[in-house]
Length: 223
Image (cartoon, rainbow, N blue to C red; front, side, top):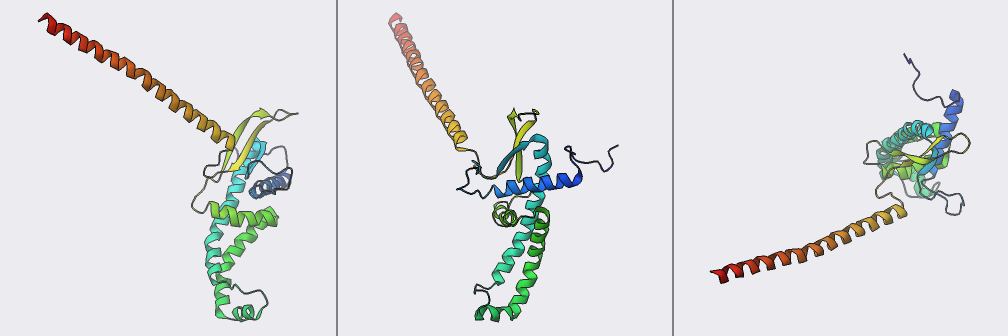
């Protein structure tokens, strides 16, 4: 029996695994908003490459964080409707701060703030939390789970030969440009083959009709 023995150890103790998944989750989330001036910026946003066992263990870790952000989204929207657009510490803002509308705003934003603090306690990264609660929460607002995918790679890691894989956030039309172009060329080639086959069938049908007409004329002359 495997009592309370769920998950891979990955050759690390509990604190080391926790720190490793925290760093990997921050790297994956921050890759959604890449820095264009960074020479090591990812070619495809929202994707990192790691080993296959780590990717499989990281997937539920990240998806639980996205679920936390999705739960906070409706509370944040309700609070934004009650928030003031005045500059902080201005006279208008102070009037709003002392009004009953501020009390309603504080009650509306409290659940979202609690969820944001919960995510920060896990990630310990302000930028990753900001990306998580703004871009990813909006992107997966209508998706109830399955926010990431793990794709195995054909290459292995140098040194120990570990199987490599990539983990990325799912999305609409998220294939790379080279992949889309190859599929487009394949579709065009298939269309050309279909057109050629149709043109080749046409003369055969015409010759068959001509032979039938000739046979009919021969029968009439014989009569």
